[in-house]
Length: 277
Image 1 (cartoon, rainbow, N blue to C red):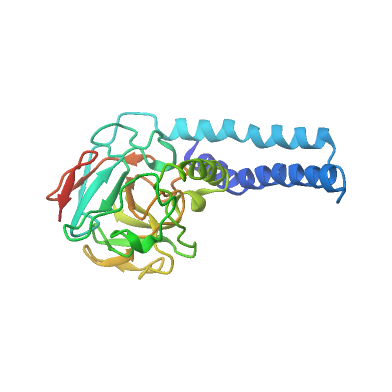
Image 2 (tube, rainbow, N blue to C red; image 1 turned 90 degrees about the vertical axis):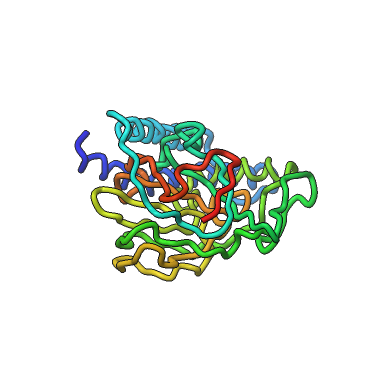
């Protein structure tokens, strides 16, 4: 498939896949409302089955797109400045495994998650109680996010709300259920509020899970390395306030391939490793 064909297919799936799965859910709810309460009309079984089959069929071109985007030799690492300042620790790091998040989809083969770990304010530990916490309990929430290089803003979204944390055993089932829904709801539901910067030479940086209303830049704007561009939030597929960072070879995560990063003065911190910038 040509690059243009890949882009067109990805654009079609971006809105078609969530719409088809949404139709299946609507038909199921309509059928339940009729059977349990006698409301509405009875959704024909054949219609529901047909909608489900069509929705599931979108997984084939989606899988082919992902496979096509990740052929060939692994790209060379690109050195950039760290996206934060202060004391942080790494989770789901590509220093330990690739793909770091268990999938190469959305250009995240070499993505990393980082959480703020200031000496004077301990981060709430994962446990049994409380099931959920307010975002203000986490030191990462509201921390400034920095441009890793001189760049141009190509994508900026920050209208999604910050949800409560899911960093507990009781909340994990809810998190996994949400993740399934987010996966078929589109990129925005997964990465939440996000920013994509064009660093030049075919390299793009994606920042995900940003705080609602925190972006200080707009699409088309030029930024300088070290400039505050947003703040850490807890939006999208996130268990607690943290920053998800990755480099890609394209502006669209649906078709982009992940690129290894190297943070200047830090390198690539391993899982659980603490680093200070």
